[in-house]
Length: 539
Image (cartoon, rainbow, N blue to C red; front, side):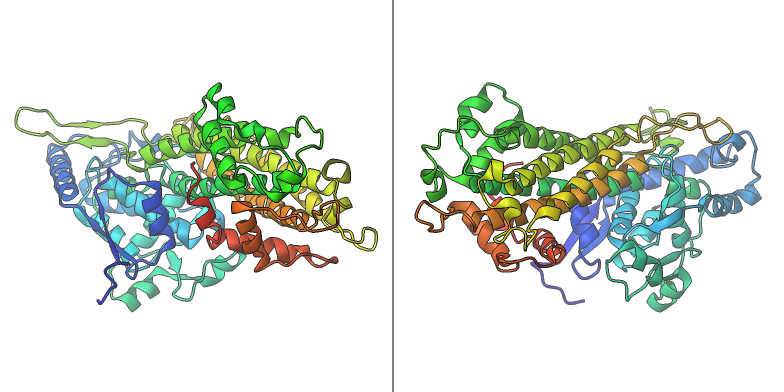
């Protein structure tokens, strides 16, 4: 297969060093064309040692949970050797009870990748062939269709991971070759039986052996994958919120004094220091707009302007911490029981039942990141309100050139307020809830996958709110006039951002369908149009 050496990447999976950036590339590039994932040789050795050890223990006839026993409340039921493989298939079939919309193909690729990485650590007692089969599916772009709902986030993401495993054993569904990433409504229209996809690719499904079905579904890879992908977007959005805030401050003819490094040095939170620096970089020392307003007599700006370092910075700190925890989770063993093969003849091997599959460490961070992004979007909406309010901005009401005949950005702010209110509801933590399951055997659960889905929704809403602020800020900047009625110009990064937006969204001299403007700016955000501006900023 001929590949562009500069673009094609071989990712070696060893269970230890997956990062947010790696996961984003796997989820959003095309496997087989842009990258290939291989299993590291040291991972193969660990997995083989683990499998050899568990087979040696099975040979003694002892009862080992999930290997020759039932599951959950059926853990005391002994399974005969002749029924062990049927036990694994039955587990996958019975646990495939997910409902609702499907995860996107990008999310499903990330889930598949993280599950393979966890198993590659070598503590599950499964054959090397299992991970190799997962990677064959990934590299061949045969991606399982996984329903979003049905996990309580303890004993792993049992229901969604079972749908992943169902495809791997040839009984589920996968995304078809004509699938294009789109809305949740279109996803179910582009899935096909996995048997059909395997026949076209000349591939075979996996035959499960002892413990392998259980190992496929024990873990928090769904909540972790969905959460990390949302966190990637949240990181990007945090820098764009700095940009939007800088543009609004300039349009409001606000002061740069609140971002003086002397201030953040007295309260040295990392996010606050970096945000203040970002705003100084974006705004520059001065501009024609700032110079025209030096003697206005205003002592302080509104909180939504001068408190940007504190609020944006706190959000960055929360996201940063969340990513750190989720990256640890992405490189963890989350099976039950865990297999510890003897290192040498002097060490004793162990098979230990445990609770590493419980999603609480991940769930807490997902809830906290949702709260942080929700607050970051809330302050963005506050600034939109300032822009459309003539008492605060000194500009025409609702940024309408002919108010009355035109409504201007009146409902832009209303829509932003609606999304902020929705985010407040979505920010209620899922991790504080628990419902006992499995006949009270699994009596405390994390609801981490619900937290991941809510976090993703908050990020999507925040993206729209920031797009709305960029829309209103550019309208306001183009309406600023000096005493002679001449247009006042911004400078530096603010001016460059204005130019980028104006290539797609012209000044609104009269009312039009502002939904289209918002979507155009969201398109710019997703296409990385502001990347050159944000490159010098710090997260």
